[in-house]
Image (cartoon, rainbow, N blue to C red; front, side):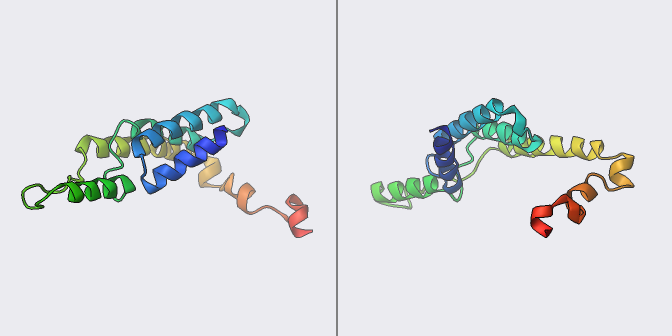
Length: 143
């Protein structure tokens, strides 16, 4: 049930349908599943938790979403004259852009600093281990 709710809220966020409530549900379900399974720890999952938490506080469903198309359609249907009553604006506050730039910049900045060591710069580890393994590493694939 939790995975289905997570998947449904993710699809709603992707197409922009009920964006605010779908983002809150996505944050709650994804964070719960992430905390529940400690063995599947990844730093990118923590970033997703932070981004969905912040996105639930912002107006990120204002542009190129079904929510916006529905509001424009309702506005056109209910208003007699488009000149006297223009459609709703699709602008967001500048602070919302800055907060997302900040939340994405911090982990990548510190990740770059963490990779400034001999293993990453001179020996290309763990990249050689991940992508340049020998044939003995993957017997089912090469074997």
